[in-house]
Image 1: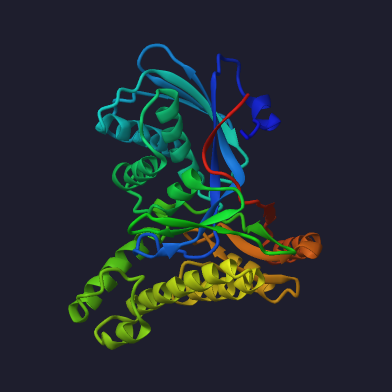
Image 2 (image 1 turned 180 degrees about the horizontal axis):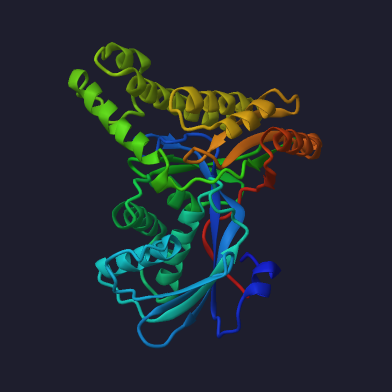
Length: 384
C-alpha cells in the first residue's frame, strides 16, 4: 500500500500544479561500516525517515528547485557538465547528467522537496536526495531503468561528478529497502538477501550528536586512499587477495613492511567483515539481542583501528554500552560525527534517552536528539 504524504510536508509545499510525488528514505546500517568501498558485505536497511519530492512540468529548458527544509531556491540547466558549487543543487544536477550520458533528454520540470531526515547525521540524506531524483526522473518521464541501474547511476554521480569516493551501500539501501528487512548486500556482485529484523522487546534508537560532517571535507577520502595503499602493499606478498574485506589477520600481520596505521585499517575491515557475517547469522537464527555485542565491537574497531570516531560520539557510545537496558551501540555512518545506533530495550527507551541527553548536555553543552526509527520500504511513488 502506498505511503501517504506527511502533513508537515504538505503544509510547506508552495502552490503549484504538483502531479507526482516520491518518497526517498534514509538508511541505517546495522553493521558493516566502510566495507562497501572495500569489497565486503554490508547490512543496511531503509528507514521511515525520508525526503519527499513534489514534481510538476515546467516551462523552457531549466529545472527549478525549492529545498523546503532550508528554504533555498535554485534554477539550473540540466545540460550543464560542471558543478555549480552549491552542494544540494549539484546532487540533483549530477543525476540529470547521468541520464543525459545514457542518451535520455531531460525536459523542463519543477520540484520541491523536504522531509524529516537530518542532514549530516549519518542517515545518508545525500543518497536519499540522489535516489529520489533518479527515481522521479525515471518514473515521471517513463524511462526503463530498474532500481539497480538507478543505484549504480547515483554512485557514479557521487564519484565522478561530486568527487566523493563512496561505495554503493547507501544508494542501494535507499532504493531497494523492504519494510522489516535488512539487506545483506555483497558489494562486489550486488547480489543481496533480505533478512528479517525481529528482535523481540528491542528497538533501534539513534542518538544524534549534532556534530555534523561533510564527507568531502572529512577524513573519509583519507580512509579510501589508505585502504588502496594497504591493499597494494598486501598484494605484493599475497597477490590473490583482491579486496581488503576478504583477508585474514594472519596475512595482514605477515606483511612486515605494512605501516602500523595501514595495518590497523586492514585489521578493522577484516574484523568488521566477520561481524557482518555473525550478525546476519544471529538474526536468521532469531538471536537478535546478541547483535548488541557486535555493535559494541564494531565501535571499538572504528574508534581504535579505523580512527573515524570523535570524543562526542565516544561519550554517547560508552554511556550506552554500559547502560543495563542497552544491548549494544556504535558509531554509524562515514564517521567524524553524526549518530550512534543503539539497540535499546523497549521498556526503557524513554529513561535511556533522558539520561544520555542530560549527561551529554552537561559534558559538551550540546543538545543531542533521539531519533526512533523503523525499518521501512525503499523509494516509492506516493499519493497526495
